[in-house]
Image (cartoon, rainbow, N blue to C red; front, side):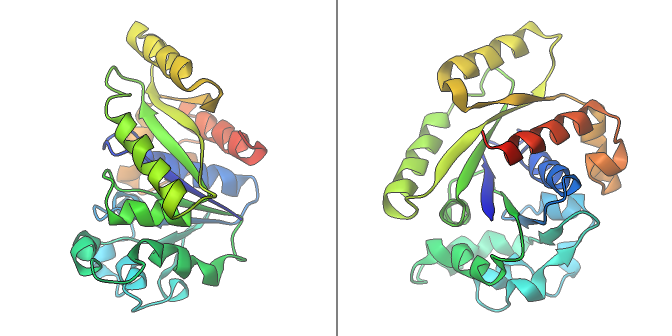
Length: 250
């Protein structure tokens, strides 16, 4: 089983879109997949029409040891989902005195470790306790970078946090790679930015680049993955290619 967290402390770079559609792409390849929504904004949950405010239990209750993953997990056509809730926004304060609070997700996942081939975690756009839980539970990190001028801005802080987690909490954690999103080959700036990212990270940058695509933006409003919404779109082609790249190992 591989546990992969999609991360960047910046919002709007495509973490949720990438988590959902990479998961769907892996499911298309025949793998058993669980998606975990670690973000209190619950965008992944809402994108798939799992209105978490109506759910009796969600990830918040798992981290609080008030429910097991089996009680909370929900079925989608392609994969399973551990939904989020706005309740998670209070978790930072509520868990501050809980022993080993950075290990709560990792320990909870032990009960389902034989059930899935891939567990994909959508991290919140910050470096707080929820993100630390994701980093401690994961084996691999995928850093999602938008193909824009400020893509690398603030990335050094993220790398510092990753190194601290590797030293103190999860020595097995590795940065699997950098995924460039919202790419438009017609724009010189996008090509230059991706070039800079490849110069900076070298072989860590995935070969697959996710092109800017209207269908990718529209799919969440229809509560569908890109494959359900428009399987012939560039977005579907890119995420299927990326899923194959993940499967083959970067």
